[in-house]
Image (cartoon, rainbow, N blue to C red; front, side, top):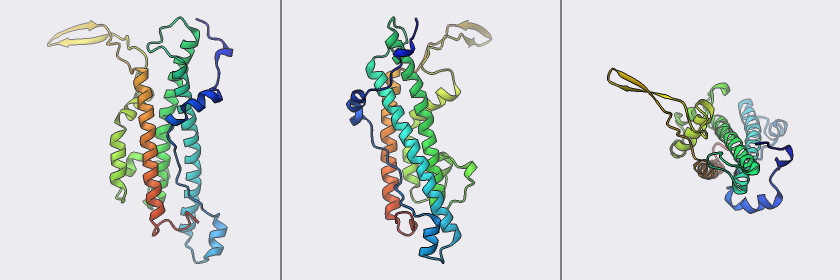
Length: 243
């Protein structure tokens, strides 16, 4: 089967409009932070650590917004290629369906990278916000879960709800390609006896991946709504963040 360059087409405006309701809104923290010089002249007694904290939070939030934009666009591509028609087992005589299947698989893998990268950026922001003092190079979402912060239960609950998401990500990243049938032979042991058997052929179904992506995005959107609401109300610690 030959796939032609002209068959690779970005989602059209009509296709994107048709799926808008399926894509949750991913909001960043909404910080409205002045630049460091302005903060200093507003209150010259402001500690250097506070100015540094607010400036770093501003730029990490900028990174988070960019990451969410890419995550949303990737979600769009996943949905569009699925709606155009895919083959669950990549077994089709249609070049267009084969192309959609390949691109669905490709963008799904990118989605999981961007998803967990987004969580780690959120972790960077929480590390700064709660002044945990964890070295930036060692910060990740799971490490924040073990920190003694007031929203710990919210983070733990969220982390528990994305077990399938993490499994999908780990499968794409570390294991045999999860969307391919696994044809490798296996070693069967029965006491002292050994025999070779046929591969299990197990794989992740594409419709399962699609549903997981939808569910995971909603979970992330709900988490951000909770975090943003908390930070906005936490007036003892959100100084210079919403001015």
